[in-house]
Length: 195
DNA sequence: CCGAGGATTATCT
DNA sequence: GATAATCCTCGGA
Image (cartoon, rainbow, N blue to C red):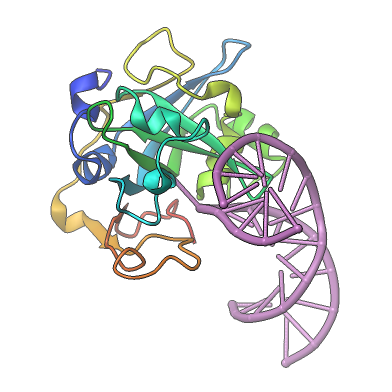
């Protein structure tokens, strides 16, 4: 079952927690299907969160965060890496969930080809986009539609006891309280969580 | 095993 | 012109 738009209309922290265990499906231009279970997420919500791209207001890059939920927000960071987010909360309420890691399920051989390596295929936000061949061309993909290039469907669920929460990664010079905000979720002891 | 440094470009000031 | 929600390689232990 593909997760409906109403799912993404919730608060980004709720969505980030609920996405753990869901299956991220990617259809390549050639038609091949790849997928993996989401095992690590981070929430970026509100205009006041100094760690969020949205905190300086709407720009051409972050515009998807301000638009209707249930679409992707894909952007380039460090000049090299594409990062995949799911846009959350109602329109004009900028929020997104960063997909930080997945456990490979389908198309593992293709992931190895895309990554040019055998290991560390999807345990990091830029690694998984490379493994799934996701780029800026996939910005604003409809995550709730089966004819999209990327969507997310229900797969497995985890009890709170199996979930870990902590501060987000890569905050750089972001000041408190945003630096330590516990808005990162991951599946405890899952080997595909980043670092 | 670990830490340092370079890669590389869209985006915003 | 500076910065960035990161990753890889390489050198040393």
